[in-house]
Length: 324
Image 1 (tube, rainbow, N blue to C red):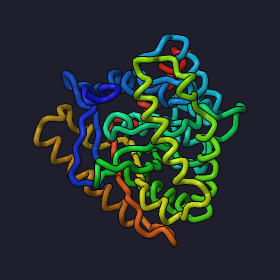
Image 2 (image 1 turned 180 degrees about the horizontal axis):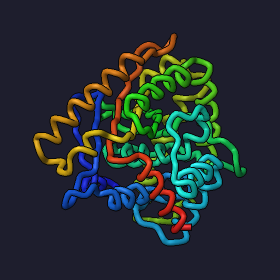
Image 3 (image 1 turned 90 degrees about the vertical axis):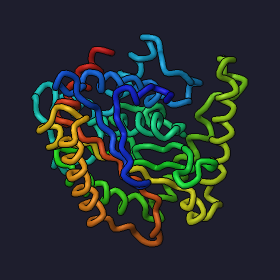
Image 4 (image 1 turned 45 degrees about the vertical axis):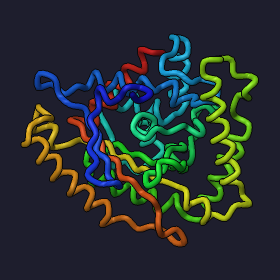
C-alpha cells in the first residue's frame, strides 16, 4: 500500500527501467478526471510543507488544507495560470515565459508519483521556504530521496523536472532543455549550496516532534536528511554527488489515445498507447544532449497521458479555489 493509495486511481506500466507510464482509466466510458483531481489534491499539504512542520500523515484538518491552498497562490505563476485557465477559459502551451509555466501543477503531479510509486521522501519544500509574494521558486521541481532504481538497498538523491503540455513531443523536448540548463557544473553547485542551507535549518528536531506514533519514522527521515546534507556539502566533489543522483523527468500531456478510446483494458487502447509512447520516447532521446562535464545521468522518463491537459489544469484551479 502506497502513502496516498494512488494505485487505486492511477495505472502504471514500465516497459523498461528508464521509462514509466502513468494514467487514470475510464468508468462507463468517461475518463476518471474527478477521481484523478482528488488524488492529486490529496498530496497538497505534503507538497506544500513536506516534513518541515513535523507532518507525517496522509489526512489533514481543514485548516491545514486551506493554508496549503493559499500558499500555492502566493506564487504569482499559479495566480496567473488560474486567470488564464479559469477566468479566460484558455491555456498556454508554447509561451516563452517558463516562470508562468510553473503555475500548471506539473510539480504537484511529480510529487505524487515520486511519493507513491517510488517510495520517496521530500528533502525540502520550496513552497514552504517561499517568504514573499511573487518570488520565483527557483531550482529543480522536486528534491527527494528515494531508493536507487538499480539497487533498492541504497538511497539516491532524486532531482526532478516536470512539464504539462498539449503536445507530448513538445513537452519532452522542453525537458531536454532543462537537462542542458540545470546540469551544468556551476548551476548544480549553486543549487546544492541553496538546498544545503535550507535543509540544515528547516526541520523540527526530534524533541520538537510531538506525534509519538510516528517518532521512529521521523527519526529515520532526519537520519537520511543529515546523510544527504553531508553529501551535498560544498567540500564534496560534484562528480561523487552525481554518482548518487537520479533524474525523474515528467511530461503530462494531452493524448490522442485517450481521445480515441474509452476503455484502458482493451488491446486497441494498449497498442495505441504503446505506439504513442514509443514515438515520444524516441523524440526525447533524439533531442537529449547532456552537458559536459556531466555525461552519464541516471534519467527516468515519466509519461502521464490524459484526454485534456487544459481541463485538468482548469479544474485543479477550481478545486483549489474552493479549498481556500
